[in-house]
Length: 375
Ligand code: FE2
Image (cartoon, rainbow, N blue to C red; front, top):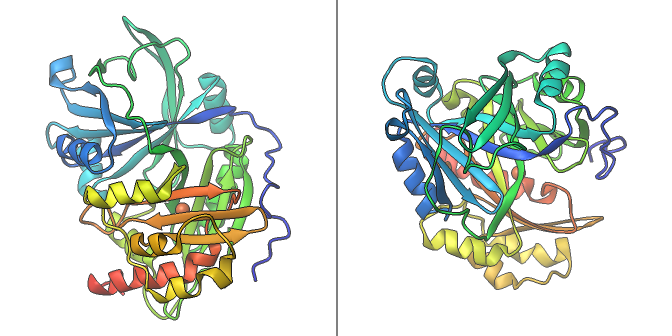
């Protein structure tokens, strides 16, 4: 059992919440073909294309599509030629998350305080305007080539950001509600470095931790610590591989992403059975769970409201802790490189991350890894 003395749920309390994060503003993915990525997220995940920037809007070097469902907002960008940093990054990492952008009250203060504490400077505070108003933005680095932008959109009424054209579509209405957490994979030995980064530079506090006894199979292990902002709403778990007999899923990620980066994005729903049914019908592939998982379910989690047969049919996992329970499911990678994937999560009181599912889940992931010749 992990030492949970300092990390029980609900103990997260940043000493100085200088960032005052309002929410995760958006995630920007840099991808090889933003037009086709947008089509996938529109038709498979059910997000609506709400804004666009590209040649038709006067942007000469890239195309960007903004997709939304509930408060989930993703941006997919592609360069229009081989020159430049974005093209280099896509060649190196493949499709992936470049920016976990945070909406804050005071961009200048967020930039000044984080860089004073050691954050890597990416973009100085800048004001961008169009006829819909203005936004203030700045960016700092986090793990690998991933960045955090700080955005103040309080003086902007346009669809997304200045320079983007409103498509006329509103955010799709459910069943995905918001980004519950965004997980980063870092190299062996680096987890505590990034835990310290979120604590000391971003003013976050540790929410939970899991060690290799919690997250291990016969072959591999990983360790994870969850960092949360002062409000407890923005949660960034950080994983690192732990030594095992074979290559862990974190090692596989690091090899194919060519470094640290975003591993998975958890999307919250109020009705996971309906959500997962719709996602499966539209072609999203999820990790398969062995039938034995459901035979042991009731003994492990006790009574739940959902029908066990339906959960088994859809492959949804359940975990319980002292505060309640949660239901969750994990997709297969969303691109050819075995890197970024998705989680759909429904919380029924639990603020955890599904610790009781780790073993069954990671054994299932390892079966997929073996099929790729990477275990
Ligand atoms: Fe997760």
